[in-house]
Amino acid sequence: MKITTIGIDLAKEVFQIHGVDEYGKAVLRKQLRRGQMTEFFANLGPCLIGLEACGSSHHWARKLGGFGHTVKLMSPQFVKPYVKTNKHDMADAEAICEAVTRPNMRFVPIKTVEQQAILSVHRARQGFVKARTSGKSDTRSTL
Image 1 (spheres, one colour):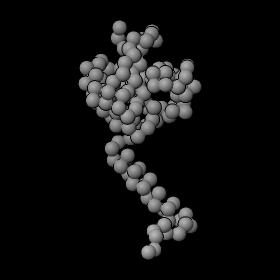
Image 2 (tube, helix red, strand yellow):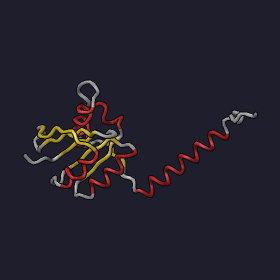
Image 3 (cartoon, helix red, strand yellow):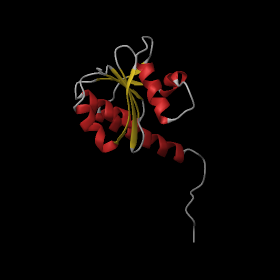
Image 4 (cartoon, one colour):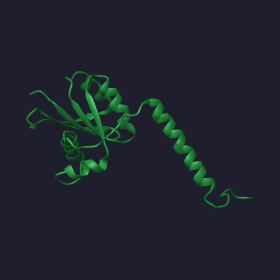
């Protein structure tokens, strides 16, 4: 039972893992806490890992890629059609696992730490510009 593809639904503390073999048969359904992720994937043979793109997915993609895995990020809107049942974490992990194997899937490039840092600076600046140009008066009270 060699795991070839894994879908991970990222959360704050508990992550859902869904793995399939080369025939597409589910061979792994597991919950991992944040602290267990590194050890689990370091001891796992190289495989294809799919993640929904979000802020923390870039961190995990870099980390898991360092263990020899092929990591691909997908926009959540492209994963949604693959959810078979009601939306819950295990169904999402299964849908991610299914979506990452599709030949016409569009993937998000993995950002470096520097790219994420610059992006956060630009977003903070954008927020300041929006607040300054909103036309509302200063909210500080004058006593």
